[in-house]
Image (cartoon, rainbow, N blue to C red):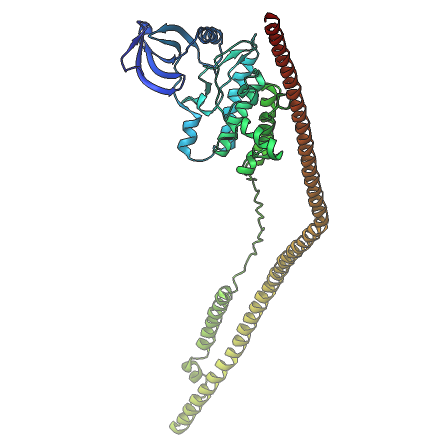
Length: 499
């Protein structure tokens, strides 16, 4: 282990240890030649000339890559019994650290977004001539930067197609051909990426390819569970893509990173539509009732009182005139016969007073009677006029109230009729919904049957391939035994001839 502050190649200063493994370690450092810019320094402990040549060739291969998802190689050198690869330093945390911090599976949307970025880098790498194969894809080798960008790191096992490379693998993420050292290609990276997504979505490492082969040889059953059987929040389409990517035989896997990305995008669209928000804007209809204003007539008898008062004043003045004409006793006395006799004079005076009293009373009564009758007629006429004025207004108000009530009744009747029609429409729609549900259930049953048939067919094909592989091994073993027997016979013949 290198100590902090160690300077390598008179240029790179060690700051801290990032990770350590059986084949070496990765350190964070800084480039003293370029103002202390951060770098990642990988120290590889390799033995043997062939391994060293493969390491140098891989470094040269990665130096030619230029993609946002691939760190750039800056330098390669040998010093103090170690081979060093200096690369661009990528800040952030790898997906394994993020998964461990969560303590649970990653949401499907996040995992698909990260994997799509990794696939974009793989499409670029696999399109090179010769194609560059990473050979060690796993959560700890995918780093998420603070800006949310995924980078592929640790290319220690990378190789060009058909060329030798550093031997190694991560058991849970390596395909069968890599475990058997049978050569790798672009489809090998797809297996590892599928296993990586399996880990992200389930929170557990998948069964290794070697364990799957051994278990299938015993009971013809693949021990690898589907992702949605462990995490039911993962859509079946996503789980199927992972299953196809992790097929044991290369011919049965997805054939390219581009195909894998395309299928994930199609699954992502269906995932987005199922998570579409359920909000629907609602329109509020406001009905405004037109209120008709009724002109009310003041039924108070104020005008009648004024007219009556005027008539009363007029009648009073007339009464005053009559009373004034009939209240002069001196004029009556002068009109009487003057007698010298005092007795007759006294009798006449008394009679005059009596006559005056009678005439005064009779005149007032006669005058008041016509006046009272006139006043009563005027009041009755005023009341009749008021009543006649009020009757049309009352009739108009009653008619308007009846119209409004009729309008309310009509609206209530329309609402009731509308509700009845809606209920009838729902009742008529129910058989269609039941029929649609039955069709959907039948479709799902047919799909399940198709999947079971496909699984059975796949199992049969796998068994046939296994049988063919066993027969091939037996033939190879027979040929090898025959060759060994022939060699032994020839050695024995030489020995016998020598004697």
